[in-house]
Image 1 (spheres, rainbow, N blue to C red):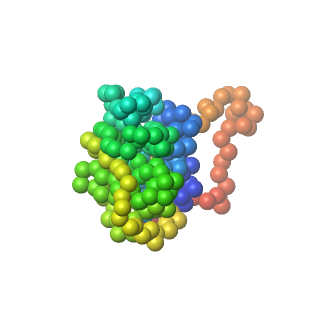
Image 2 (spheres, rainbow, N blue to C red):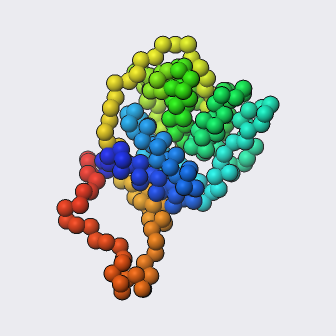
Image 3 (cartoon, rainbow, N blue to C red):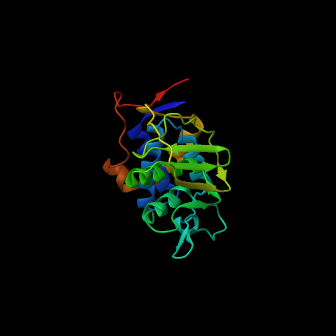
Length: 225
């Protein structure tokens, strides 16, 4: 298990998403979503690595929902929805009629929570989110409910349903400062991230402009267990 700071985890996932073919903007969204989840005590590194490997090279548009004035968010594509693409669409249309409801199928639905938490905060309204046997409650301040039990990481949900909740929620007293990533997921994310590095040319090598060697004192992720 590799231990990373939240900033390191965010940067790694951002680069990995870009390496997997996501746009710069979508890669930024991947990083922010992961930081919220890990900072809320929900392990998401392995799930995100699996999501990127599964959708490697796919266009953002093929993984995103469409917006219809009468039907709201709908999905007509053959591939399951990406939770990050769905989350950004929800954020864009959160105030429109028909934005609340359910949609599917959705890959790695846990990664949708940060967007629904943001909508809850913006609307100052608690939210309930469900898929399969998983149930999550979000506070009106956009935090995970204190009594929420983290569900097992699910790679695919047939449907994700969400909507306002009248239940009073108390924010969880969790303030993790590190993310923990299985070695296999860490290696997978790094392989994708390496695609963003400029290839070394002969001219760069001769001029000494190749990849700098890390100093012996350079900070390195800690290995745990």
